[in-house]
Image (cartoon, rainbow, N blue to C red; front, side, top):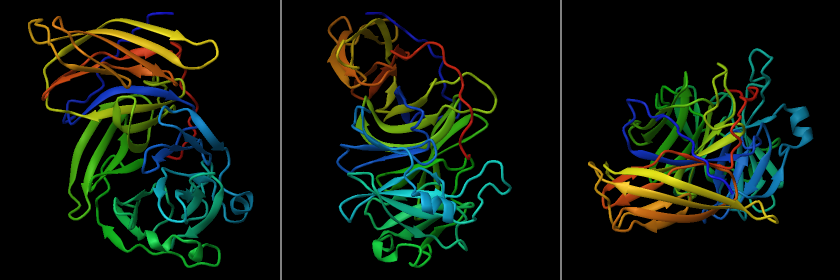
Length: 388
């Protein structure tokens, strides 16, 4: 058993609008690199990486299945597809994972060696490869990410500065390549790609959330696909590489942002030594509470990788007055504060990470500093392996 506190300086930018609150970040395998998606019932999470692997976990991020090379060998050799970007879930045919694909060689110029992209299809239950559909290269030179609309009718991606969409009904076995047609987009939103670019996407209600980065400034924008209007949701400065977004409830968060362990400048990784999955929740209103973690106890079971965690925290208002009856949560566990503002929160974790106590009462809230739960203190930046 041990007590470990990790004091992070705030990573929020001055421009950050405060719409989302960071509640933690799980340390996940480096193989989880490019992006993520989930089943509609949120029972399974799927990760891509480092280049063409497909991995399945449960909501606690315990791996349940995996394929290290999802793209068939003959397709890699004959066409050149060797890289999968941020995926999306696609209904129909018993459940499918849609894999945006490109031909990528970092030593070549241009690095997209075949000049075209495709949507691969994998079985959501077995992860087995099914087929792929070819995208018309006149409209898109490569497929780096994809996201299915909430009604399941469109598949969104980007080409240059524009967002484009394909009919989901056209992604079918009947249109499978190489004999099938090259699909053409049916919708386009001009100049809607954010200034930070796009590394991953997810829909929240009817808004398309787009993650990206530029010079260590990480941003998430919400785009209205009817008008093309953008609204900044998150801006933060961390060391790593922005990748995919997911929307599901687990580990104290609703919005999840994958950060790969890669950087060009040699800075110390914020969430190292492997990949980090940031957990964020929507801000309930006003950041008014001071939350202090007084003690953290972590235990392990000899026959399990599970971490048993107990956190003691105190919630106060300005001036030190205790907050009674606040909901204090930590990595999925929770407790109500007593008349002294104290809470004792117990939870279990299957993956190490950094987590904060989030306390809320009405529209007022506060978060503690992040607590290191089981992550090695020494973190060495990894070699850059991504195309972005």
